[in-house]
Length: 83
Image (cartoon, rainbow, N blue to C red; front, top):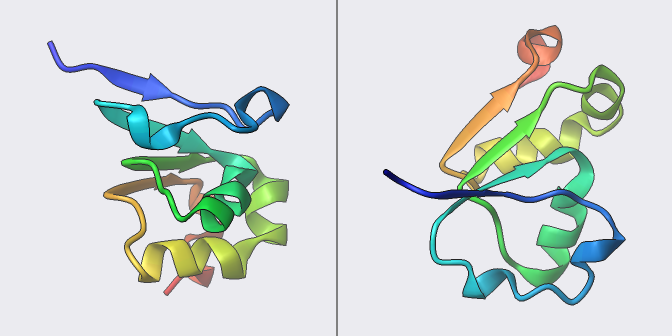
């Protein structure tokens, strides 16, 4: 069985050692702001929050275009606005 770590995006992850994770990871919502700062990205990105998606479309589109994550699960509500 493969393991996967599901990461939140709250204050509890401040100073978390992401590079020590030895399995696939799922990151969500606005956590990409921290990933940019520390130059680390999860294996998979998930965001189905319509407000977050619409208000951060350019940043999320950049994540997808630059293939920062292996896969993306994004709400259909913005698919026509992506690359």
